[in-house]
Length: 72
Image (cartoon, rainbow, N blue to C red; front, side, top):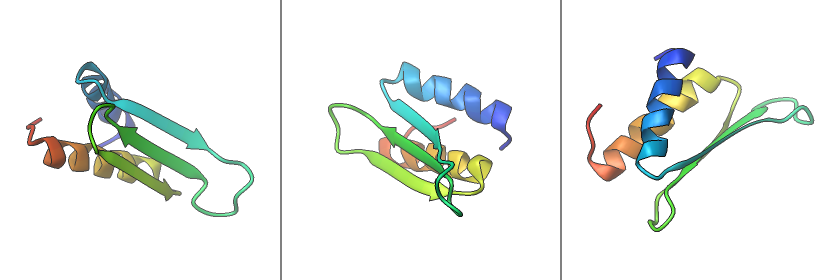
């Protein structure tokens, strides 16, 4: 997907009321990045630790879209 396209998609999720949190953790030796996507007022939550931020952002966006039955 690429980081630039992911950012555009994250803007879309934000406009739909989702909260996105991306964290880089310097203390860990592996899985040093965390992606968290949630939508207040719903049961939806996606959280994953990774070393491949682009892949997990794409995975989280796809998971969000599948949960809410939206199309991109």
